[in-house]
Image: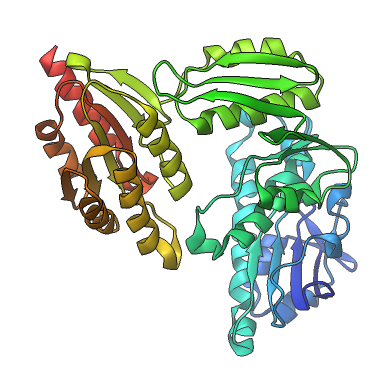
Length: 432
């Protein structure tokens, strides 16, 4: 349903596009919402159709006004609720349903239209209103929660990632919190008690909850943590009156907290925690996700090249600080992207963190990481190099590393830091 509403809590006029089903209909006729939005000249033309869903959406999204407010600004804004239908993941009898592997190309294309094309078309139509108002807010939220209608909702944490798109941690938290807002009352919210933003957003769910974290109040509580890359994190957690020890093959405290979150979900569904912990101990890190390679002459490579953010880099640097390699601690760091106005400050902070972690060799990649080089050098990192891109860094990396080095490679996806990983693996292969 597409309607203009005044949100009492936000003081914000909003246009809601709620696609409870792929097809929407107006009075006395049926219309394809995506085609309507693509062809319309302005929002009033769309509103004139008086659209409403052919089939009502899931109960959790019936009350559009019940969704959490945006920023407390007195400006015209837009909230796009491109909520898909449960039928997208429905039965084999439904042409748009069934397992993902069985979806026809037309069905996949339609899903893209509903969840991407339609909201972007609506945004295009509403931009003139925002320009005349001198500002406003556009938020595109909650697609997956409405489409799948989950029995359990988990938000692991809220961190400074994608700040360029959201602007603040509060905005990131509000977007993630839509998951809690759309849970059915009889669904379960898995809540990280150590994260203030998650705790606040979890209040948007009125039903059952299972908590995790280091807090004494957590249902699944982390009691001890031995943080290392090799052989991996060792953790002790408590649920109820019993403590359990878990030896992961994944390095970094972040891996332990992710495991804790997964264990909370296991507890929420009443499954066997011992069996879950045993399976977790077999889990190997994927390529780019913390995979450890033992190279020649005692060198160890930690491939965490898939992506990066300030919090993720800080976590892996803490693990590096706690490690005691026979050689040097080495960080190959690519730019952290999508950080908006604070990108410079966050990269400078990364340079300071590298020095505090005992990094002796820093190889920085990309224009933003140049500021990390400068602060790291001033903070006492002995060897510092900078390369414009990962291709050049990959060509040079073999000249910098030595026997016994512990090397961590990390950077945002677009930086293609796997090139450096491949180069290091090639150097090791040539030497064996």
